[in-house]
Image (cartoon, rainbow, N blue to C red; front, side, top):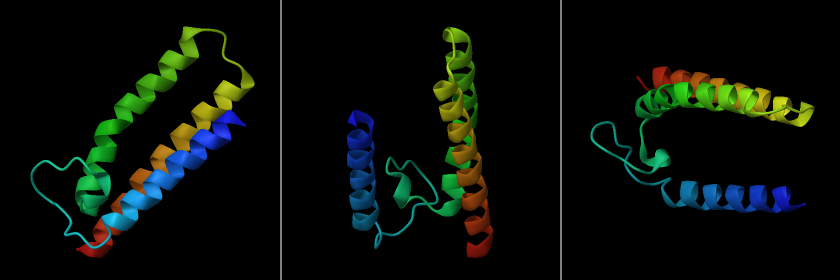
Length: 97
């Protein structure tokens, strides 16, 4: 129950931030902290830079202790979500060009 509440709050915050930044101009150069203010090209680059971190987190979790089935499922979900996000950003970037 606790995890569902945390996930719900995180999703609500994401939806609000996305709605607020929907009408802003997308940044393609320079530093931008907010993910939704980036162009799809910059999102793709940021996701590619995060990929080694995701892999490292999965490896650390796997070797840190005795992994349970739940942990392995979460690792697989994290991997698939990361790959899907990279593919989506690449597709949208090429459509923008």
